Length: 159
Image 1 (cartoon, rainbow, N blue to C red):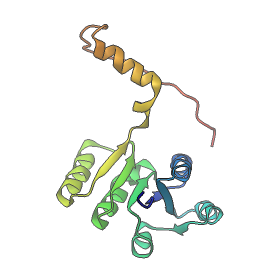
Image 2 (tube, rainbow, N blue to C red):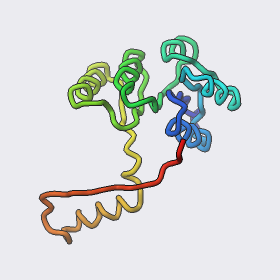
Image 3 (tube, rainbow, N blue to C red):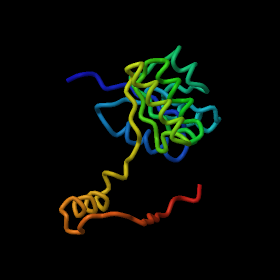
């Protein structure tokens, strides 16, 4: 059995905490550090007995992980992804990958040039409702779909 993969989570907000929970629950992974400048993130890191860094540059120089989950605010995804690419660290970047297509394309092209893998966190594709909808579409039962108007509604915690 190989050693667990060492992962860092950037951004310890609602989504970052979910990633942290999943990492902690898997024997194949270990949470290496949390990168987030907020004091509450530092407190979380201390409570979990993992390293805390206020910046990705500090993390890279002091505790380089094997992968990074980027769960920072959306407008930071491209810059954080570029930092990971520059450091040669594979990253899963939460959706949206970028604020616009040009920025997303720039990020993807940088990843391809550097040979550093990037993933986008499209977790809902694993939801049983979405998988069932895809199966119905793929079966042809609905005919040729030419347009879709959809709405997805869920309740998120107030915080």
